[in-house]
Image (cartoon, rainbow over all chains, first blue to last red; front, top):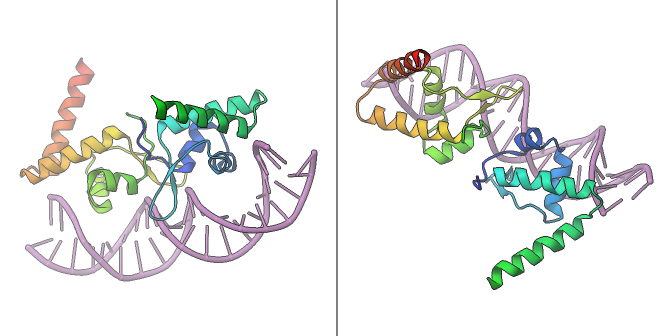
Length: 81
Length: 81
DNA sequence: CGTGTAAGGAATTCTGACACG
DNA sequence: CGTGTAAGGAATTCTGACACG
C-alpha cells in the first residue's frame, strides 16, 4: 500500500482532486510523492488516503500550515519513540 | 492489490521486463490491463506478479499458447464452480 | 515464437506565472 | 490562502511494421 507507483492522473481519478490541488499540497509539504527519472510524481495508495483526509480537513476550515504542523509533531514524536 | 493503477513504465521497473514483452503477453491474452481514456495501459500489483510468473514459465520452456490454455481451463473451472 | 528497434503521433505531466480575493 | 488557467516544453506511451530465426 505504501509503494509509490501511481501517476498524478490516476490519483486525480481516485481522489476527485485536481492536479493543481495535489501539487499544491505537495508544495505545502503535506505529501511526499516519489519522482521518476523524468520528473513525474509517483504516489502510493496511502498517499491517496492521505490526500482525501487533507482535503476533508481543509473543507472543515483548517489551513495547510496547520496540517503541516500536525505532521511535524507526528514526526517529532516518532523520532522520540 | 487488484486495482489497475500503474502505467507500463512502472511495471517495467517492478518486473524487469521490457515494454515489448509486457505488450506481447497482453497480445497473447495472458494479462488484461485496463486502459485510460487516452489508451494507456494500467496494471495492478497482481498483474506484476502474474507477469513475473509468465516470464518464469517461458524461461522454463513453456510457450505462450500453453500458458493461455492454462488460463482458459482455470476460467472454465471457475465458471463451473 | 518471442523479442528488438526505429517511426510518427497522441496523451500525460512538468514548471513558473498571472489571476482572484 | 487555495485554486484556476493558458503556455511551452519534456517525458511517456501507443500502434503497426520490419527483422531475426
